[in-house]
Structures are given as structure tokens and as C-alpha cells.
Image (cartoon, rainbow, N blue to C red):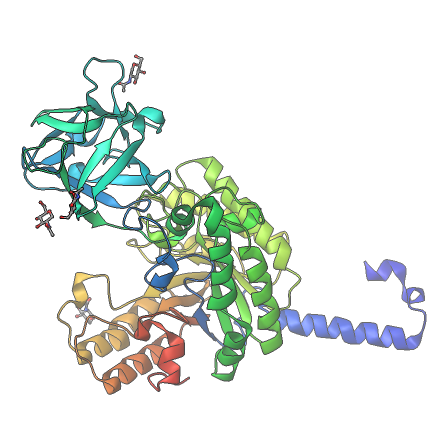
Length: 518
Ligand SMILES: *[C@@H]1O[C@H](CO)[C@@H](O)[C@H](O)[C@H]1NC(C)=O
Ligand SMILES: *[C@@H]1O[C@H](CO)[C@@H](O)[C@H](O)[C@H]1NC(C)=O
Ligand SMILES: *[C@@H]1O[C@H](CO)[C@@H](O)[C@H](O)[C@H]1NC(C)=O
Ligand SMILES: *[C@@H]1O[C@H](CO)[C@@H](O)[C@H](O)[C@H]1NC(C)=O
């Protein structure tokens, strides 16, 4: 495009000279920015994740949930309900699709009801096969069934707790009457309530919580549309600040991996319950990164429908629905396109990670590969230099993406190495954990590192393990082993995470307290 205009376009020699300098600078910066695709980056990145910032994870900052009214009952909370009269658990017979009974001795999947929160008092109950509990208005006697595929008025219930003993509840149906276990095989919504909390009352149930999610859906829907916007904006403004970027840079880090959620692309008015403002926070991160010389990896941590069912992908109730339809794949490509378009011109955009931790077999390899091809193309429409990172599926063959990634230049495979979350690590000693890093993780990395293949990124690791009572020196050795081995990953590594109430999961704490030195 310059050649057509010729030198006459430049009014003087000096402007031509500055033009040449500018072109050189752009060329050099694009080279150091990943540049020649397939080129090895100047040096593997040492970075840290900003976990729990723009995608909520309750365990990272529990206090974020403190102000939620009735906060035991969030979206995705699993309730098990034992009738005080049958002394047995409510159960969605066959896992759903038919009646609710009250005859099970041990609670498991069919006896677990996942909440969808309407407001602090009103809920839908989702059963194992994903139907919603409702009252059967067709029949006589208001029997209770789990047949609806989407919740309406007859699937909405209020949970009334005994103020003197919150493990005792009554459940009021949309007809104003309460559920009762008339017998082990007949549950109806026709009890008037108001009869005290005696244990011969068929409308009283003992509730226990079998699991909870504390992600972005839960926190925003928990606070509700009136309060959530302020709570989230305060969190974004205070949890990560400019000083953190200065600190990262001063402590030997040269990059930052920033998890974002799909709703960021519709800022400032994302679909409820999500609230606007995370995009502005990401803009700030880019400007601070530029000021302190850090490379930014944008990481789509939460995709529409959830790609793994975990709270960190903003799953509403533990379901994994991403990739099951073309439409949520297209929607996700549009999110990537939006992010790539917005930040492609930032000199600090280093890489875009298309999705975090898709889980096999819920996410099929075919859907994932078609998404990765389309997501890669979306990034390339805006940037020829940003690396494109593809996360391996959890619990699958770590080499499965190599053929695809090898064809797409400038692509990177992300693997996450935790000495946790697997029975393999139960009972391992300090030295066994360290040996595992040196031997097995080295072998894992070698297996996926190929000539002319994608670069390899250990996008998450932590100096935490299942060892109980380890000393500071044990932690130091463990961290050092991981730095050494993951330092050989061709793209580099990122610690999980910068800040966390659990000290070993906070790189800031680990460095400030002398556990880790870069
Ligand atoms: C009530 O009947 C309608 C029409 O047959 C049916 O679609 C619906 O699922 C029924 N509702 C329940 C709760 O069984
Ligand atoms: C709770 O306990 C107080 C004091 O014993 C009693 O007066 C009140 O009726 C109880 N409330 C319920 C709902 O049982
Ligand atoms: C509350 O109710 C449960 C279930 O009946 C019972 O096990 C527990 O002891 C009660 N707690 C109190 C404080 O009364
Ligand atoms: C680690 O690698 C060694 C050597 O190949 C192997 O014998 C061992 O089973 C591996 N450990 C685990 C837990 O997979």
C-alpha cells in the first residue's frame, strides 16, 4: 500500500526518515510480539493468571459472597430432602421424566435437586436428567413430577426454613400449598402448612446441601439486578489494581494471563444475570500492562453454556452445554472476534486463548476442532502476530490437537499441571511429588513438543499439593522443580494465580514470603 503512493507522499526527507524508523519499530515489535509465525518466542514467558478477577471463583475470594441474602441457596446448589415422616429421601424416579417419590434410603444423583434461583426465596429444582420439578396441574391431587424441560410458574417453589433450625424446610408450590410426603410413593402439593415443625408432619423435610457452585452466575444472580452491578464493579476496581502490574514486573514476571467470560463481548449490557463493566477493567489491564512492560494473554475462561460444568466456567448448575450446538460455537467465535478486534492494535496483546479447559467427553473432539479452526481464523482476521492458544481437553489424549495445531502457524497448546485432582497424588511424599515433576511432567512435555509443531504453554500450575504439614523448604523445592521443568515449555508458563485467600495459591504471597523466587 505504501509503494503506490511513492515517496512523494512524504513531504520532507525527515518525515520519510521517521516513517522508516516507525516501520522498523513496528516490525521489531511485531517480531517480539510473536512475529514470524512458527517462530520461537524470544524467550519463554513467565506469567501469572489473574484468577477470580473478571470471572468469579468463590474459593479465591469468599468474601465476595458475604452480602448475598439467603446465600446457602445459590444457583447450582444441590439439595437433598429427607421426609421426617417416611424418614427417606425425595427422589426423581428414573432420574427424571416422571414422578417424585419419597422412598430412598441413601441420597445420590437421583435424590439431588439442583437449584435455579429466581430470587432469594423462590427457586426451580432441576433433577438428574435435567427436567424441572413441578406440580401436575393436569391431574387431580396436585402430584409432584419432574417432566418440564424448562421452568415456568408451576415449576417455581418457595423454600421456607424453620428460623430455629435451618435444616428443617417446607416447600411451597405455585398453588400456595406445601409439598408433603403422603406416602413413600406419593408426593403431593396440597398441605396447608402452619402446623409447626414436628417430626410427624409430612410437609417437613430435613435439608442437606450436597454441593455448591460459587462462580459468576451465582454471585451476580445471588445479589440480583439491583445490587450486583455495584458489587461487581467494586470487586473489579479493588481486587486487581495498577500496583499489581508494577509488582509483577518488578518481581520477574513478563506476562499475565487474564481469564474473561463470554459476556464481556456484550458489555455494557450483557444478558442477565451478568453485569457490565468487565470490559473496562480489561482495558485498564492492557494500559497497565503496557506501562509496566507485560505481555497479555486473553483467556476465554467461561464460554456460553459452560465447557466443563465447573464454577470457573460460569456454569449455572454444573451442566456442560457448550459445543452441543453450532449456535453456541458461533456465538463463541463472535466473542473471540470481538476481543481480537478490540485489542489487536495493542502492542501488548501477546496471545488469545480460545477456550479454557474444555472437558472430555462432554465436549467432543470434533466440535472442539471446528471451533478452534474458526476461532483461529477470527483472531487472524485482526492480527497476524498474536499467538492463538488452544487448551487441551481435560481427561483426554494430550496429543489429540497436535495435527490441527501444527497446520495453524502461531498456535500454542495449553496444558495444566497440578499435583492435585487425581488419586495418583494421594499419599505421595514431598520427594515423590518433586520426582513426579522432574520425571513424569518432563515426559509429558516431551510427548507434546514436536519439531515444527505448536509451542507448548503450561498455562496453569501451582506450588500446592496433597502433602500435609510440608515445611517452607519443601514448598521451595517443589516450586523450584516446577519452574525448572515448566521453564522448558517452549511458550512458557503461568502460575495459578496472582491473589488468593489460600496462601500457596497466591503467587503474590509466595513471592513476598520467600517461597518462590523468579
Ligand atoms: C399437562 O398436559 C399437557 C398436555 O397433555 C402436557 O404437555 C404437560 O406436560 C402436562 N403437564 C404435566 C405437569 O404433566
Ligand atoms: C423458635 O423458638 C422460639 C423460642 O423457643 C419460639 O418462641 C418460636 O415459636 C420458635 N419458632 C418456630 C417457627 O418454631
Ligand atoms: C435440627 O433438625 C435436625 C433434623 O431433625 C436435627 O438433627 C438437629 O438436631 C436439629 N438442630 C437443633 C439445633 O435443634
Ligand atoms: C512416573 O514415571 C515413572 C517412570 O516412567 C513411572 O514408572 C511411574 O508410574 C509414573 N508415575 C505416575 C504416577 O504415573
